[in-house]
Amino acid sequence: MRKATVVWLAAATLLLTSCGGTTGPESPDGTDAADTAPDSSPTVTVTQTTTVPADGTPDGSGNGADASSCEVTEDWTLLPDVKPGSSGDPIREVRTGRHDCFDRVVFDIHGTDEVGFDVQYQPEVRQPGSGRPMPVAGDAALRVIVRSSAQGAPGSGSEEPLAAMGEHFVPESELADWGALRSVRYAGWFEGQVTFALGVREELPFRAFTWLNEDRGVREVVVDIAHDPN
Image (cartoon, rainbow, N blue to C red; front, side, top):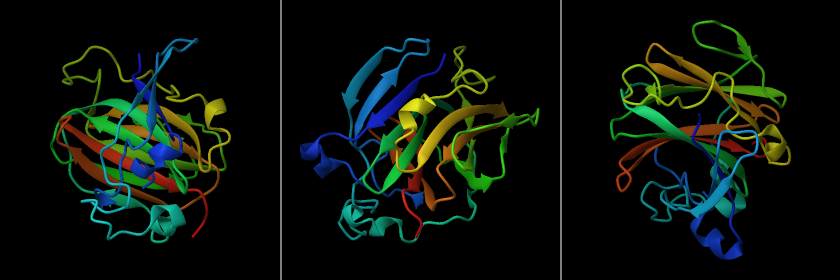
């Protein structure tokens, strides 16, 4: 059973705390979040959270590009973004967020250790181990590998799996009108790393980074995908 959180942009009064790799640009939360139960008729609970600064800087100092102008996306890339490192802590939650200039996916790792990742466009994403293809909506497939354990994996301390193999964390129908994101699927855990398949409208610039949420004791791996080419 998955624990998924769909993140929605709040009303204009909340935009002051929302819109925003490497370590720590803007908030992986910063928007309304919806927790969806993993049955065919999901029950949604809406909550509000804010953590990482909205201006694209680690400390919220305002030295980053103005996210509202989309300048924040100018230096993003189409090339692979790889960060070394690994963690034995499990991913327990996957969340999505919709911002003015980009869409966001956040992978919550329950632990504070640094973690590595490998984010890159692929002709298709394949399940680790079996090599079976993992089709996604959109004209581009962005593979996200997080070098950690996953909830329900051996040694994770939990029997409940993060998700079923191939499961969508968000129904594709709910992402159809988003600026970039089209799918978020679980491709599986294998040999100390977790693979996800993101469907993207087309090959659009992205960034990836980690952020330590000390209050929650969570290391967040964040992938932002720009709505438009640079």
